[in-house]
Amino acid sequence: MKWFLAALCAASLAVQPVFSEILETNSGFALIQGGTFVMGSPASEEGRRDNEEEHKVTVSGFYMGRHEVTVGEFRRFAEDSQYRTSAEARHNGKVYLESGTAVQEDADWAHPYMDQEDDHPVVLVSWYDAAHYCNWLSKQEGFRPAYIIKGTKVIWKQGARGYRLPTEAEWEYACRAGTAAAFHTGSRITKGQANFDGYATAPVGSYPPNPWGLYDMHGNVWEWCWDWYGRYSLKEEADPAGPETGEDRINRGGCYRGVSDGSALRSAYRWYGDPPEHSDNTLGFRVVRAAGR
Image 1 (cartoon, rainbow, N blue to C red):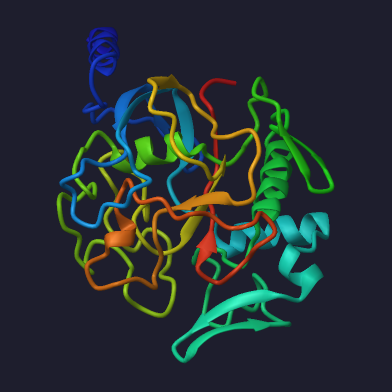
Image 2: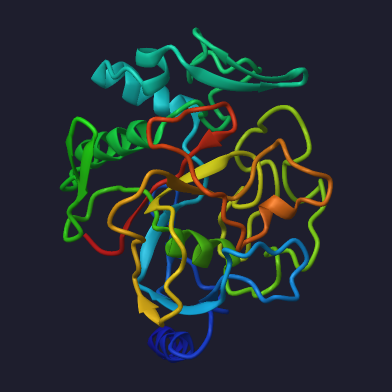
């Protein structure tokens, strides 16, 4: 019966987004079965922006963290590797406060200017910090690192099985979890379904997961993706990884600071990105790795 269900699921994936409820987990990771979906949003979607053109994309299977990387997980990395984040090195962490936005010299992942425990998502980490974390985690678990990092040059070794940041396409595919509406919850999202329109992060997993068992894909913190920001190619694509060069790296998903309708949390919403050295207390990340060993 299991092989029949797997074959039926594979056949379904070839023509539409995944609808199977079959999930496998591996050390806090969900196995996301590959498939084809429509990335972007229809012109009729409320809150739609002009950089969300619909196009068909196919992604291969991958493991994705069920939660955003937490303060406790990042602390183990920082202490084990004696790593200094971009904010610590540059003394330029940006923080969002009830009174406004400011750059604070002492703001960093351990001092985010809000109360956080080890089970909260780490913030004030740059894209570079996230890449270094991925390589460290790969080595810890015996995988060949996905990145070659030389200063500010990061090369993705796509044959490696190590941990890495999701591509923008992988992120949206996983966020949608087989749905086609603005949110995986439907055309609307409520404060009981995601952390937004507030002033602080919530512990990861505080809100219901999406249909594929992933938590906080809407809200809590913005999440870094691999891609440089750029306009979509409207051609049908397989495993796109974004432009080869750019100025800003994509982040997705919205955060605890938003607007009352949650429009920035939409599955298709594309923030224009931030420079890879940027860090602030609304921005974190989660990791993925290719399926298989």
